[in-house]
Amino acid sequence: MARSSTRPHVQPADNLGPLRMIFHAASRYPGRMALALIALTVTAAATLAIPSGFRLIIDQGFATGVDPEAIGRWFRYLFLIVLVLAIGTACRYYFVSWLGERVVADIRVTVQRNLLRLSPGFFEENSPGEISSRMTADTAQIEHVVGTTISVALRNALMAIGGTAYLFYLAPSLTGLLVIAIPLVLLPIVWFGRKVRSVSRDSQDRIADVGAMVSEVLGAMKIVQAFNQEDRERDRFAAAVEASFDTARRRILLRALMTGIVITFIFGAITALLWRGAIQVAEGTLSGGTIAAFVLTGVLVAGAFGSLAEVYGDLLRGAGAASRLNELLKEHPAVAPPVDPRPLPQPVRGALAFRDITFRYPTRPEQAAVTDLTLQIEPGETVAIVGPSGAGKSTLFQLAERFYDPQAGVVEIDGIPLIHADPADVRQRIAFVPQEGILFAASARDNLRYGNWAASDDAIWQAARDANAEQFLKGLPQGLDTYLGEGGARLSGGQRQRLAIARALLRDAPILLLDEATSALDAESERLVQDALDRLMQDRTTLVIAHRLATVRAADRIVVMDDGRIVEQGRHADLAAAGGLYARLAALQFDTLAA
Image: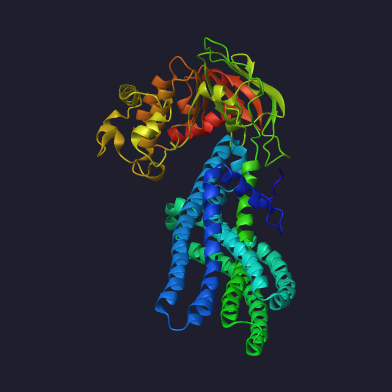
């Protein structure tokens, strides 16, 4: 799907069609739906029975004169109706609210499951903050629709239909006039509903913008404060909030106008009809109980139609939320397992090959990141990839883990083309240490077990020792159970990097990818991390991206890239003597160090 911004393109709709997704999720619980529908029907019927009770009290109880027993019998009947209404309402609230919460939970899990299948390229084109907003704000809107709006809509629809039928039974001529007025009510509902739908979608988008901005700024708070940009970010956030408010104000105004016009039409019609009814009572053609029941039922019917006009806007907002979530559900991974994946060979060798690779990132199709590249890495070999920024070094890692497929050529592990293998099997044979140790807001134990969730404590501590992380881990307040904070904020950069190395050790994969794992460290941390890397690299096929050439002089082979191509390869001494790009880069770095 082509996109021109960080938010997936959405076609505006003016109907409730997207709510089918919600119904499909709710249909997994037919028993609960049936109980909720029964409770809705009972409460609607009990509500409509109340005017009938008053009619009997007036026409039957008071007609007998001052007879406490006769009057009491009809009041007991009315109290029974109220009791049924109370029990039915409680049951309705429980079952409908349960369905709302359950549907939202299922939708969140389903969307998250699909998001985990998508390739990293999807999250480069779409803001994670905006996606997070869909998972929270939009699902909350759906919970409101399922747990409240649909319930109110169904109950009022039943009351409107049943009440209209009862009105025909009480006074056909008066009710006929009422029915004529119904189309006058429906027309503004439909017209305003379409307007509300469009503005509601805009309102949800503006709220998503606010959420994404909050996430972005809080995640970069040190940069914001370091560059004294608090005032700018405050103004930018205030502008986003104001844009959200202005959109919400238009939505509220439209809904207010729609509700006001509909209620005016409905109660105006009711008033006119009651005027006519009062004349019939005076003429003796209607009883006092009948006109009382007609008034009460008419009010209930008018309220039901008025509520339907109001909840229609909520249903449209729910449809908008559902359509946004449905987009995430319909996304398919750009890199998917083949129908009949080929198993990777056993025993594992760890050979990695790039053959005639040409690749362009989906977000930059006009520029090739790698062009006609061929590189064979033998089992157990350590190969360093060097070159200027933008040369295509990190792209090799992306292709090796099959986050992307090349437009031309083939990537192989142990002789099997990756496009024929299951991506999960490919990644099982690879351990990755990024330039900055990426940790989760969890305990040290869980962050380490990310490399191998079944690892025992003994294995975890052994990996920590090999990564020079044991000492500081034992010094944490709760040891391995210490919460590390968002992104491992409670640890230093060197400590985070050593945890990332320990995680890779627990992975125990035959192929190791190192993305300049020591570039952001001080001298002491770099020494500890480099010692840990040396142990990690033993007996593994290792591909190292390096900017500091001093760290890769001992590599079995150095591959020099420039503008997406391999321009040189060999040992450090040979490349330094060849006078090419590597020699120039080495001269710049080593001369600077010497100075």
